[in-house]
Length: 441
Image (cartoon, rainbow, N blue to C red; front, side, top):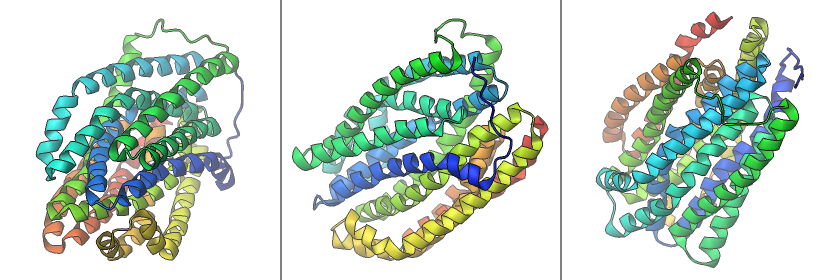
């Protein structure tokens, strides 16, 4: 049986060391979006970029809505790891595998309904609509593999094996960039090439890491993974409650970003394209800062499992400091290279011109958002999902109201001002609920 002991001293240096592999894996994720945006943004016609933006926004909302498959896994696994209950870790992993496959089956069957909803929700030309449907027809079949990858990443984060979780994500992202670039640039498959790139990369990644994980569990935990004795009522109820709370929280979060695309479409297709480009900066910063949040999830769960309140506060303080400090560095990098990155992502002059006018928002949002990202990780690691859900619902509802008003009087700047306020609201609401985590000690 595994008997690895972890130090109770989670200094800034230790958190940083654990986060370094996650930095690279999280950097790889938005790089896929940036490459896809660059591939579509340089095809001379904005319809390809618009179609990819809308289609990926929809699929992202669907896939991220089931982010509990990662987040719920981290919290439960990390706390079981703190208690050295390795059989429960394996059973949690297998239960979520089954759940992921069931959800995927129903989503694939729902594809016709998804297309109808997209058609009625967005204002787009007939040509753009055809491209969107072409993307969805292919990308929907990558969903089962994406869900399994979520679970595997959550498992390795929960047992503080951040290097392995990072290798999984880096492989996925690298293959995605390779196949998308090959299919678009060499075979001229435009939107279809981007969708196929995601499908191929997820299938290859899941094959490699399922095999690796099987032998990892046998070697480290001395347990043979079996789909037996998984349906224990108390465990299923706990898993359902945690997952459903995170599911609702993530639906509201992803809808908020889909709402940005919707408001952009009301201003015109050029603004959809511009905001797609600009959001890559926010997504890049978010995934980079989430390295601390992801690392903290596992550590927080571990400290709660060990009932170590002093270490818990040390982790909270040090991780928040690192997150804010890193966000300021990211803002400085954006100040220096904003125009250069925009010029790489698109060669369409009108899109460049509009993008330049939104420089301020790209600089100020990452530092403001860094606190809510880190608080997310703390709440997930503590499995304090009810409060996580409530905080998000409150923040999104206020955001929707504010964004409608501000977009009417300030146009696209109103959309970005609303996004800034949304990040601020998330921090305030999570901070309000923070004291409830302390009841676990």
